[in-house]
Length: 65
Image 1: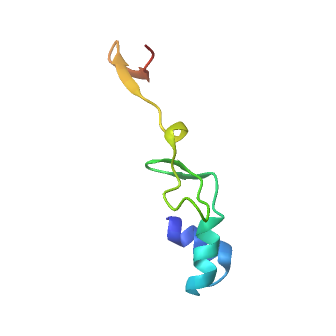
Image 2: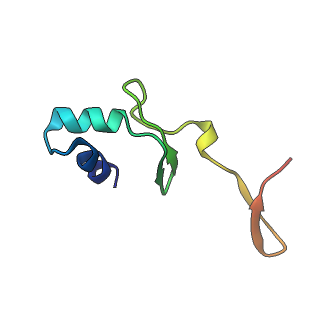
Image 3: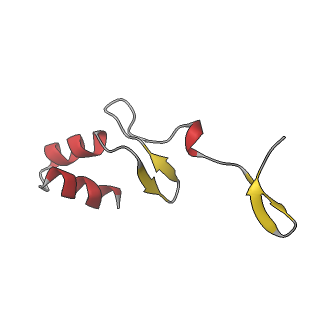
C-alpha cells in the first residue's frame, strides 16, 4: 500500500518520482503503525508509532505501568 500510495501521489511509476513521493509520505496508516517517511528515515516508524496493549477483563486495553 505504501508503494501504491506513493505512485498515486507521484502520478507516475518513474523510480525517482516514486522515491521522492515515499520520502514525503506522512501520516500513512499501515498495519505496523502510522508511518512518517523522510529522506533521512526510510523506515517511517519511531517509538511514538506504537502502543503497548494488554488484556484486562477479557478485552484489549492500553498498557500502563
